[in-house]
Length: 209
Image (cartoon, rainbow, N blue to C red; front, top):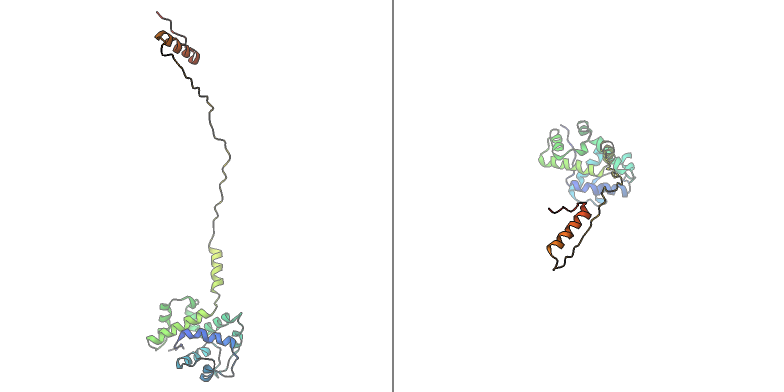
C-alpha cells in the first residue's frame, strides 16, 4: 500500500515554505539545518520528507532545481503547485481537480491507500490541504473564464415615453348670482326666472291662459 508523508503540525508548512524563499540554499537538508532556520521542535522534522515528496529535495537530501525556481516569488506558488501535482500524482489521476475536493473525499482516498490510523490520515489530509492553500493551480483564472462565458447580463434599457399633451375639452363655467329684493312679489320673481330661461336656454315664456 502507498504511504503519504504528513506534517505533525501541518499549519507550520506555511512558515517553512516562506523561509525557503528568503534563506540561502543549503548543500544538504537535515534536521540540524531545520533547527538552524528556527524549527526546533521534534515534530518539525516530519516536514523534511514532504520537501522530498514534492521534488524540492532529491534522494541525497540536496536541494533541486525546483527549490531554486521556488525562490522566485513571482512564480513560487505555481512552482509549488507543480510539486504538489507530481507528489500526489495518484490522487490527481483520480481527481484532476484534487485541490478542490472536500475533506471527506480526500480522507477516503488516502485511507483506502494507507495502513495509517485515523489521526495520521487526518494529518495527511490536512497536509495536502495546507500545501494547496500555498500553491496556485490556476483556479482563479479558470473560474473567471467560466464566469465570462456562462453568465450573461441583460441590461434594462429605459423605455422612452413620447411627449403627448394631455387630452382635455375646453369649457366655460358661468356663475350667475341673482339678488332678489326681499319686498319683490311673486309676479316679479316669475318674470326674473322667465327672462333667465329665455336668455340662457332659449325658452320662450309660456303664454298664460
